[in-house]
Amino acid sequence: MNNSHLTAYALDFVSFLIQKTRNRNKIRNIILFGSVARQDESKESDIDIFVDILEDNKIIEKEINFILENFTDSVKYKNYWKLFGIKNEIKLNIGNIDNWKELKPSLIADGIVLYGKYKPKIKEGQHNVFFIWENIKPNAKRVLFNKKVFGYKQNKKSYHGLLVQYKGERLGKGCIVVPIEHSSFFHSLFKKFKVNVRIKKVLEYY
Image 1 (cartoon, rainbow, N blue to C red):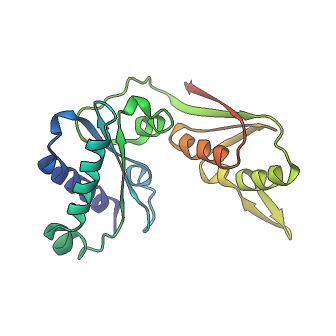
Image 2: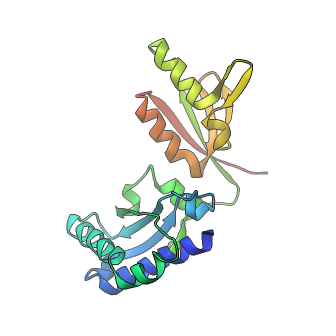
């Protein structure tokens, strides 16, 4: 299974959605993002799609999710995509893009527009995000967090942390910088560990 097949599958769903929805005029953009858009997906990766609507609306959200269920139950899916070996789950995020501040950086950095004309106004350069935090307590939580982020050594063997995996850099005791496309992942990590963190987005020129 190559990346182009998953992108084509996502695009096929979008075409199905636009044909079936009664709220087409309220959909501004549909954007593929995440690992499939970055072309670093695994066999089990979800296909992340953001449906940008004029304003958050539970009725529209319910309709779009219902259409997704119909798509995965359609003849086209069963007789083509399923036989083609595609079993990746389509994961939808639905709402006004300006209200999704944590997700928006990822959409800007690596999003692929499948429908609409989304063109965020960003300058040229490397977009990075700084995460700055104070000492983590209790000690047990700090040790677990540091192992997760920075890695650790055991029996003379080194194990890489998430910072290496996501191409980030440690700048100090309580400061890391990561590419903007991975910032939402680290933001969720800090939330999971309940660590207060300051976040600064920067644009670096070379």
